[in-house]
Length: 235
Image (tube, rainbow, N blue to C red):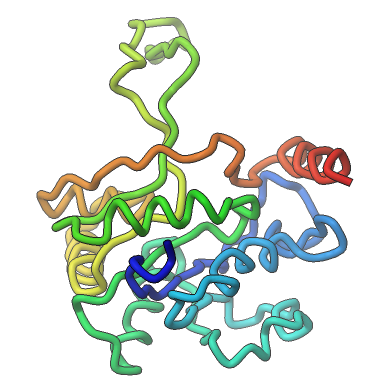
């Protein structure tokens, strides 16, 4: 299957501090099974034969990255992290351009604290978007009843969950299109929460690719504990 999949670059924005974890270090450097969350998040890409290279966007004063074994991997480049996620991703794309990457190249942006990406999901994303004119993202259909709240914290409406998806990563777009969308949205001071929202703002409609619901992002302590328990059950 991999021979029919497109080559791609991976971008990992990893400059955040993860304040909601209330830990002594950024959440991407917390331990999971004897290795950091960030190392696990990189694994699925570094093990893929279609990978062209990885750019990790890091804070300038990050003291943890140099101590990781993968920091010496020649396929990984380091870019400057920005104030917001969009800034970090844009810096990574600028680095790819400087190194000769083409506007038509596929770029997959993945959360640094999303360590449970399955190879089957990655291959599905690559296969289904290989010839797509826009690109898209892994996502999961909403399962629970959804409520819209008013300013007083009371239910204002029940949302039709059949039209609602949770956005996951990786998110896969052409380098040139993503670069332009992010740069233009930042100039316009538009709130960009993920790469798909920048592409949407530019007038395009990313494709939703259904992925596994266990591809969770570690945001709170209970997320990390769930992953630890899951790995312990696997033996």
